[in-house]
Amino acid sequence: EVQLVESGGGLVQAGGSLRLSCVASGFTFDDYAIGWFRQAPGKEREGVSCISRRDGSRYYADSVAGRFTISSDNAKNTVYLQMNSLKPEDTAVYYCAADREPIPEMIPLYFGSWGQGIQVTVSS
Image (tube, rainbow, N blue to C red; front, side, top):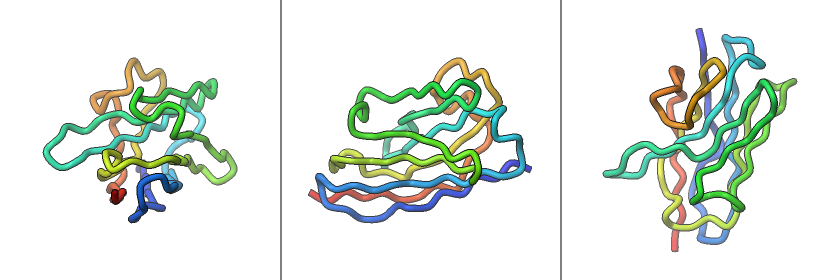
């Protein structure tokens, strides 16, 4: 059974930083792409960043490019999302998601396994 557990969320002031972690279990880590998504109140869930375990490729939404960095630690089966220069518009519930590669597009439709989500709140 695929399990994804997020941690590291919280409240931070605008301009601050947070690092989210996603610990994965129940599947062969190297066969899967891992993505971070977020959903703000009243909005659709959107892709934030994704990493290909197969070739290490990284993808970012335009809204976070240059501020967020995705990385992985194979030994720990963990994917991280380092979030810098946070803005109030980054406030959302953040989800870790995974599915077998290849992933055609960084949208929720193509990710079959999800974590429970974690709140990130950025105050102005």
